[in-house]
Amino acid sequence: MKTYLAVYLGSLLLAVVLTPIVIFLARALKIYDNPNARKVHAAAIPRIGGVAVFFSAIVLVIITLFLDNSIGQSFREMQAKIITLLAAGTFIFLVGLVDDLRPMRARYKLAAQIIAAIAVCASGIRIDFFMVDNLFTLNFGWLAFPITIFWIVAITNAVNLIDGLDGLAAGISAITCAVMAVFAINQSQPLMAVLMLGLLGSLSGFLFFNFNPARVFMGDSGSMFLGFTMASASVICATKSGTILALALPALALGLPIFDTIFSMLRRYLNRRAITSADRGHLHHILLDMGLGHRHVVILMYAMTAVAAGLGMVMMLVRGAEIVAVFFCVILLLVVTFRVTGAFRIRSTIAALKRNFGISNRSRQEVARFEEIELHFRAVKTFSQWWQTVCLAADKMDFISGSLHLTKRDGTVETFVWKGSDEKVDLRDVVKITLPVRDRRIDSALELNIEVRANGSLESAARRGTLFTRLIEGYSVASLPQQTKSIPKTEVLVEE
Image (cartoon, rainbow, N blue to C red; front, side, top):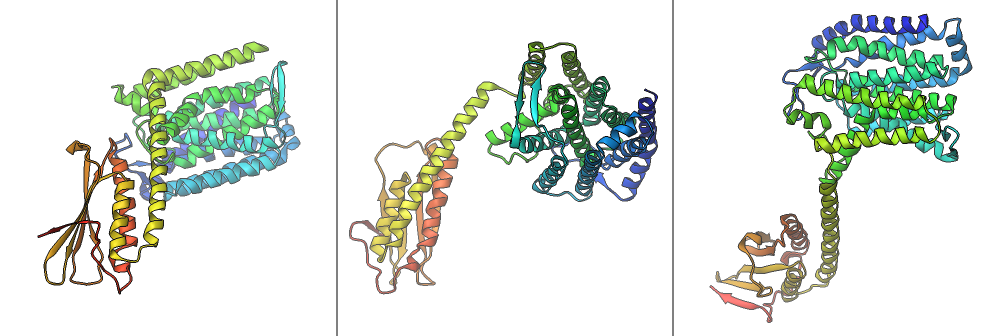
């Protein structure tokens, strides 16, 4: 127990010493997190605090590994796994640090996380089976690899995405580390207990400078390292203890960031945005918009995390089906929290899914019509055939009308007109587009005007207009054979 206390206090003191140094270096090198429309801070803040978190934890942990006690013995028994975990965690820290210095694309960070997770899996750190007390055991076989990789990457990004307010990610991670440390001690896993206490101490010291008003942010170097290390450590705990509690406890303690990530991805999908794009729809943003102060939001989310983690620890005291019951009760509590705050609404989600399905189905139909009409354009040889195909395209794409102004060599202007159905159209439901049409003559000005029926969706009208524009641009009058340019007999001519 003295070793545990020494690791915690040592990493705490080291963080208190290192963090001001990191702040000084960040200011000297001008490494700031600048405010923007999405972020809540109003001034530039140093953003490489993860350096202090990383070194404060890793130094004490590495020193402890070589002690001549149960911790050192445990390290020697699983040396390859621990070295791989620490090396992969260091790699993730460095990737995050590069992103803090010069932002990189999300896909590259995701690729780095997957590579690190694969390395951890290859060392033998895997979720090979799923056991709930004496109720049942589920062996995953070859699925252990993808399941473990998904778990590590998911937790890494959940912690990264919750880092939106002063002290929020650090505080929630500290609570999670404390829960995991208690579990590791209870399960006689001193090595994992030391790792979690090292992280807990470094976060405790870092929070002196990170809590609102923050003097430094941990950045991706800190949040990604924390998420990756906690996720990997939970897998080791699950492997050695042979119980699902090792995964369930951190999952519940990190319930807020996990569900916030899930609902954020769902929200962005429903809004037809990239799931990695930034927005202001996270739980902490919603609480701020409800009128709560910055500190109040952070403390409230600390409290919710502590309640979820505390209820989760009840699973250590019960057996059998009661474990499952407690787990799902806490999950339900977390979902209700997001529902009450408005971060997740079932009816609006279902409505958005129906809307997106309708838009996707309509888009496929419009593209299919475009491809069909394109075949007709490829067979066009004369101006008459070209205009007839233009009229066919207008009809297929549900246009209201179309007209082409043609200036002849003698200076007179002829207008070719196509009309759709006589159905009355609300003028507010009409999109008008004017397109220039390339002719053979440089001095000839062809102008094609179309009226598109919106059908309640300006997006659909714009998409059909765009597809029609592609046809006109790809198959213009200038592309017709030189010898023919006759006036279409079937069209209405208006002399001006």
